[in-house]
Amino acid sequence: MEDFKQVELLIVEDSEGDVELILRNLKKNKLANNVYVVRDGAEALDFIHATGQFGGRLGAGNPKVIFLDLKLPKVNGMEVLRQVKSDERTRQIPVVIMTSSGEDRDLKEAYAVGANSYIVKPVVFDDFARLVQELGLYWIVTNRSPR
Amino acid sequence: MNPVADDTPYLADPGLVRSALMNILDDFNSEKLALRDLHAAMMNILDDIDEERRQLGLAKDALEASNRELEAFSYSVSHDLQAPLRAISGYSRALVEDYQSVLDDQGKHYLGMIEKYGTKMGRLIQDLLAFSRLGRRHITKVTVDMEESANEAFLELTPDSTVRRVRFHVGRLPPAQGDRAMIHQVFVNLLGNALKFTRSRTEAEISVTSYRSDEGVVYSVSDNGVGFDMKYSGKLFGIFERLHNENEFEGTGIGLALVARIVTHHGGRIWASSVVDQGAEFHFTLAGKE
Image 1: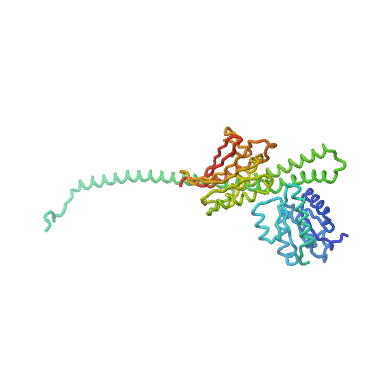
Image 2 (image 1 turned 180 degrees about the horizontal axis):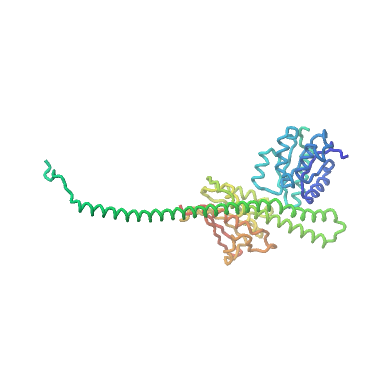
């Protein structure tokens, strides 16, 4: 059985390429040790609420931060965010929206629902690599949040 | 006493009364017929109006539906089209970085090209999205300090031009009524072009000035750059139109199209003049004749 106690960063992302490239850059900065990846919104909710296939997580505590994509299979990211932020057991987990879209309505809605940060993933690789490094350092190392 | 008053009771001839009444009835009948016709005509018109209204409603529904579709389309473009591109340029970079030792120069060059064009396509998509978003946006008109807007735009751009000397001059510019963010974008794009096309000059001169014409205030951005051939001036503001090849000057061909769209959205006009190798001037108004 996996040890979920250690999970600091939960990545919710369906694009395999994005996942690999994020992990690659976290690894380069020695930030990838306690990362868990889920690939759709339903899995994300199961992980966060310790239900379904993640029943074993019960009592393991919340991740330190969630990197959440918006466009996801099954349950979209906005709905995941809404559920995380409306449940008093999970609402204090910082959620960083990481999306390809710079659409105004997504930005507004995400903050209205309670996102802690909103990042538009750059297409240019250097920018993307730098961003992942900065985000990892800030949310995993620098930032303090109740656990 | 009234001299013309006649107190004698009027005794009508029954025959006359009868024919008069018949006449009136006849008249009434024909009026009735005419009225019926009128009524029928009005009903027809009302039917027609109803039909037109229905057609109009249908057209409006269709327009709204196609607008929604268009919005969903560009939303999907912005979400879905960029992830594959990020992967393409990301993986080619990862290859270059992680497999340096097994790649010869040619191999590295090819991967560099993949990354370059992936990045270029990303930029194209972003510009295109900005362009389509503009069509959906409402203009929020406020009084805009044009001198401040031009100066801010220039400051935003100058990190790109640190090596050479750029003389930038903003003259007296009357304030304009317009959308602050959109006008800022106009200056960013026009000044960005001015910086780009003066790149070969040891001393670039870029200025923003204004004058009054019968169209109102005209704002002008001029530079001493490479300019363009007036023969092609008709293509200048078209989307994806470019007057220089990619090796001379980079760009997606959307900048000026965006500027023109903003200006016409405001009810203004934009035009340009240039002499090859002696600089270019762009002039725009933000409102039609007052």
